[in-house]
Image 1 (tube, each protein chain N blue to C red):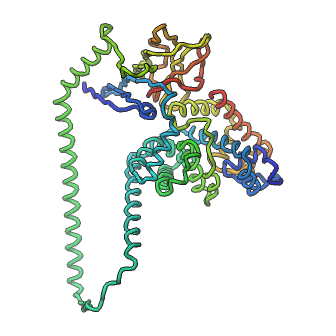
Image 2: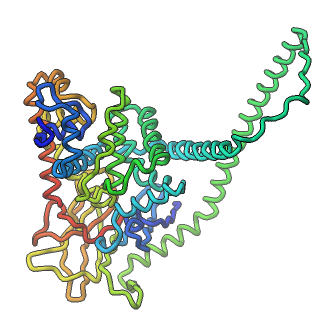
Image 3: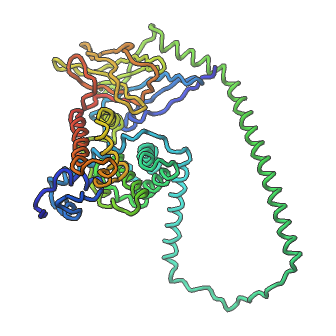
Length: 223
Length: 284
């Protein structure tokens, strides 16, 4: 039996600037026995503050900072691109484009725009839809600001919010979910969705609006 | 619609999604954009909607990017940096005098026989073939060497690692072990929690210290945040004692849930089925 002993800093511990370490003893059979140290969440810097510090370093041309941003958010960016494009090569292209743009034009993400993770998710969705539908339709949208009510930079809070959104999507009426997914993940217009589903334009509008209001309500409850 | 009239929610949603307004809409894209730019109320609504849409985007099934993608990105970044340096340097040399060509003697073109040309190509092809063969053999030898070295290291350290791991496990599991949390002598004690979690069995032991007293009808609740992105799992409620100590021992949890993080929230007495913000303690 071979045992491995690893020590590394937990992501959340490092987010909050703590000294905690996470020790994991695993066997070859990958049975994780994990010891986690909890830190008080309130008095430490939040995820958005860490995003700002990383972006300052990127503006100062520190490649390590970009590598750190990649480590933190590449999974989100790649997953969003895959959801829209369903093609690993194309999804990686979009991911590279998004991170390279962040490096070359760091001021496109202004600190006041909220969480970097949320902004990257939206920009990736926009770039991916540009790729399948052609053109650059989203430049105005990339400039929009995210609300600061939710700290999407803090991983634990982001996961809880995402759990809420996924829960809402799972319990949503299928036709409502389909309408919002066609609009958001495939960039279909109301008219195109109406044609695809055979439903009147007004019904499509109502379904999309209701879907987003249901998500909003769930997030309000969580907050 | 004049710019003074607020767009409806449907119009703002389409604007946030970057989609054109519907055929039957009373407003066009430019009218919505112009209005939003000058209206704080609509900007707040747009920010909120964009945040919700960002969560919708992130709700996509989580897939890890290809392992080499980071290397490719960092190479592209290095290339980008290298490209910017010479262009800066060239900018400084743009006024430099062009090289003097008066001393350059033009070379007389040489003629080669067709046999010599073909012979050269054949020799080059033979060299290339030989180089590929040598490279393949070299790669195979390196891989073999790597495997054998790894096996040797593993077998020689196996016994020592096993003995050390056994000792660590005995220390951690022994009820006689003394457990002390050390903090700075000047620091005000902060709430701290420790969790030991075995995902294959769904077994969890959690201890906390320096917890603040709770208001009446409130309880602390521990949450396991699964790595697969599903909803947080409640892992037991707890109340601190007079010294601020508390523990949760082996709460009912399904086996096989890999945890991404753990959190503690304050809930109404009896606990909740989903966590209420804010997260008071977090780790993962």
